[in-house]
Amino acid sequence: MAAVRILTRAVNALGGTALLVAAAAAATASPAGAAESAAGKVRICAKGSYDTTASLQAAGNGQNWRTQIIEPGTCKNAPSGGSGRIDVFGHKSSSKFHVGSVNYKAGQTVELSTTGSTAAPRLVVNGGGPGTRAVVNH
Image 1 (cartoon, helix red, strand yellow):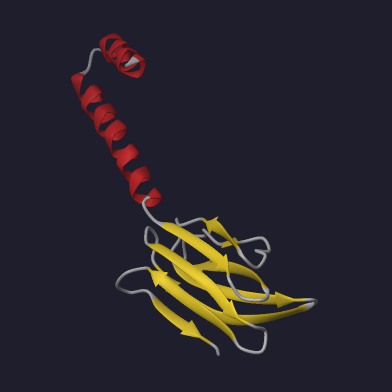
Image 2 (tube, rainbow, N blue to C red; image 1 turned 30 degrees about the vertical axis):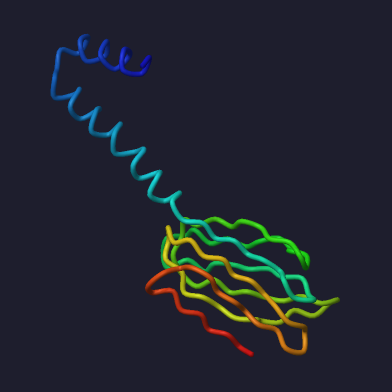
């Protein structure tokens, strides 16, 4: 409410209703855009016998990310703002291996779970909707 009063005072001081219309349009557009990008959720779970990490290679928008190590039996949320390929890796001792990847579109809700052992690692994809495609190595 205070922001509306300040905006009204600024418009009155400048003497223009066009400014008020433009400011009101900008004020209502920003929250909707923010809600849209926050609508999705990416959750990475390590359900196998090895540690897990994941990274997003964003498609041209510079919103790449990488998780920290996720220990077996735990899950962590990752950013959901960028579109691109999410690569999922397993870790055991000093070795790192590619478990699989998923084509991801910003705003989707998806859970990626690693299962199995280092001898037979597997990526399980839940959610994502149309356009989400898993590419599993093993």
